Length: 280
Image (cartoon, rainbow, N blue to C red; front, side):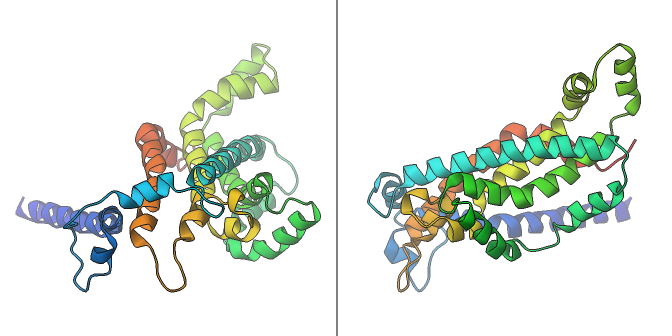
C-alpha cells in the first residue's frame, strides 16, 4: 500500500511539473500582453504586471493603416483556415474510405507513400510550390495559400481517416447493401455518422494548420491586405526594437479561437484521437 501511495504521489508531482512547464510560456505571454513597455524592458521584469494596461490590445484592435489592418488579417485567417479544413476533409474522407474499403494494386504502397510525405519538412515544398503557383498566377491569393496548406494537410488527414474507417465493421455496409442501399448512400448515411469523432479530430488538425501557419503565408503572400494573422503580428518585431506588449496581445487573440474550439469539441476530440488506434 505504501509503495502504491508513493508511486501515486510521484506521478502526481511529475504531472504537475509537466503541466507547469507546458503552461508557463502561455501564462507569461498573457502577463506580458498587459505590461507597459517600461516593464517589459526592465532589468528585473516581474511575473505579474505592476501597472497593468490594455494598450497592447487597444492598439492591435483599433489601429488601421496601409501596413496594418488587424480585422482584414483576421478575415484572411478565418477564410484560409476554413477553406483548408473543408477541402482537406472532403478529399481525406473520400481518400481514406477508398484506401480502407477498396482493394487494388499498389494500395499498400500508396498508403505508406502518403504517410512518408509527413516525414518531409514543409520547407522543401516552398520552391516547387512557388514555381507552380507563379505559373498558375496564384501567388498572393488566398486560394493559392489554401492549396499550399492542403499539400501537407490532406496526406495526414487521409491516413487518419483510413484508420477510423478501418474500425467500422464491413458487416454494417453489407447489411445496408442487402437492404438495397447504394455505395454513396451507405457511405453518407451509415459510415460517416460513425466517424464523427475522427472527422472532428482531423478537422481540428486542418484548422489549426491553416490558422497558425507562418512560413508559407510569409513566402506566398506579399500584399499587406492579404497577410494572415501570424504574418501580420510578426511584423511588430522590428530590426531594432520590438513592441512586445502589442505582439503578445496579438498572440493571445490568435490563441483564443483555438482554445474555444478545443473546449467545444474536446469530447469528440479525445475519442477521435483514440478511435483510429484500434482495429476491430
